[in-house]
Image (tube, rainbow, N blue to C red; front, side):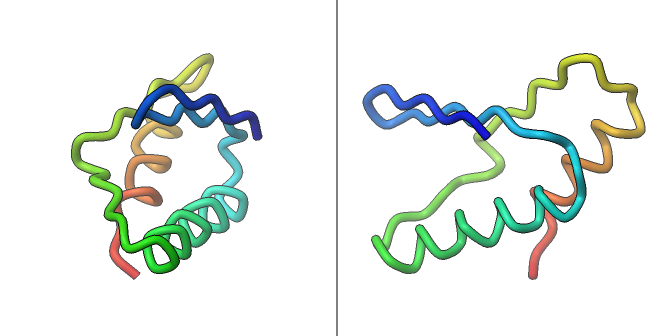
Length: 67
């Protein structure tokens, strides 16, 4: 994974493997708990590169699902 930050924005580049995305979501939840900040996933964007529609929908579901 590659991460870029500017001001209050973060860009994450990642693989689309389900396990990897679930672990990434867990790390983001830990960040929220540790620092008391909230990540607004509904204001976030997923920008797919070389993925079909099914993969994009699967990724969006994994990121937006409640635990």
